[in-house]
Image (tube, one colour):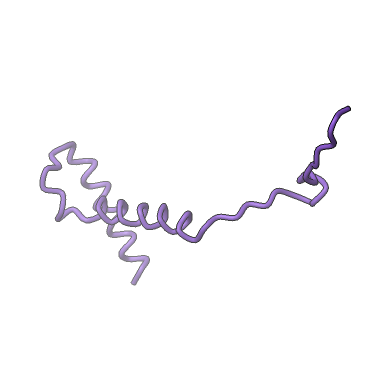
Length: 71
């Protein structure tokens, strides 16, 4: 004799997929992105950066554009 198993209603019958994330699951990646962006855009902290001057000029222009948009 086989036993009956209980099944959950499928997501198709409930109308979609339900995903619950804690607040820090979105906040931590966003914070990490902002910190890395600020590190890239702040040329004063780039002591060991000795690369192509075109890359530095590009980053400086991006920084100026971001600062101009924020003001």
